[in-house]
Length: 73
Length: 453
Image 1 (cartoon, helix red, strand yellow):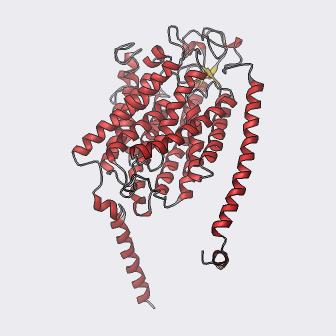
Image 2 (cartoon, helix red, strand yellow):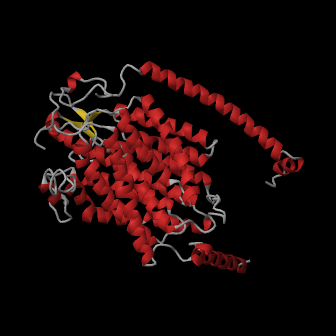
Image 3 (cartoon, one colour):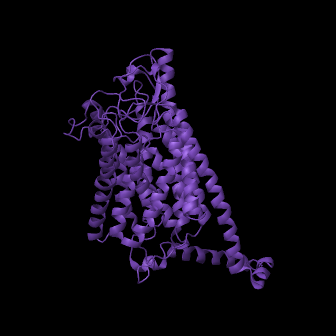
């Protein structure tokens, strides 16, 4: 049993092409990766929006805004 | 060099490894930036020098005995062969007074190969360096650096990163780009030392809550990590043999096709490792960013840990497997770092145990599952890759050759009162004296300038 196309290197390399595990699962792997990629963007945009919301709630006081725009910070 | 093709192959191979040495220098610039940035201002120059001086010390000890160990120990010795298995004359030639350690016109490659391995040795020592900043004595660290850089990693390489290493033959151990043989062992060694060394003063509150000791230059830390990624390209390429014939490999492979190989002389391609390096970096960065909620340090660390996790099998993985494995390793190492910190009060200043040790360990283990049954070697009679072979290999790397020697040496140094800097020096800062002197000199110059008005 082997996850790759080879169970031995007693071969002529001219006859060997793919060497990676689970040949035949390429499409499903791409689907998984694309889904994860999209999920990451969805998570990220929500996280970023929440970060700004928290920053504003905690820090956007008149005093801080004044300091930030006067060169004090 | 008796034919044109033969001459070209020799010169190409020499130059190939030479370029990797120059590229790998970037890893060490990166480590300097990373550690110096991570330290507080009051310690930063001593931190720089602590890391810098491992370079000459590991260099000369690699010449004295480290290179010989790599060629003398593949058989155990006395596991699959005696001293210098399979060719004792090679080991003898690599003794410091040996005939292959000198300039000679009939050997144009040995020195370059020695140098490529030396840069791996520096890396093993530098990994430990970051974890122990701001409280370890320079003498103690340099003894540890010599141990890991020129002894224990060399043994682990002879065992598990050599075409005739006993771990490859008996366990089918596969670790193409050194998840275990450099990263897990260095992380394990760092953990062994950290447990004895103890945390920095002020790191843990009375109730055990860890405090964040902020780096004095956070972005320098991150750019240092970025520099390490860059040098890592040299590391990857140096791990390969660029071009080999079936005759050179002299195993079961037949035919005329020439190929790049891993250190085990198993075929791979530069194309495969280039894509997998980048995909595992991507997986590591994305998961690092996610788990740390965008923290720059842990995102950059995640990128590195992603590459490290996938390294054991990046000669073979599909790029999406490399991406996913890199991501899984980063998740595991991030969680383990904070768990170990809270549970055992371990102060790892830069997360080296996690990024290198845990990521390297899991990388070796994961390879055993994903590459199960694949031939570890082109030589007859060698075991195939298995989950249990890889797990035992990971234990040997992280615990047997990493943690235990680190812990023992740290205990010896502690017993001789040579491990940790004095408390007063730690409170003042290692650079306090030189900073005071610099301030005095600055005032003197200012006074002199004022006197001219």
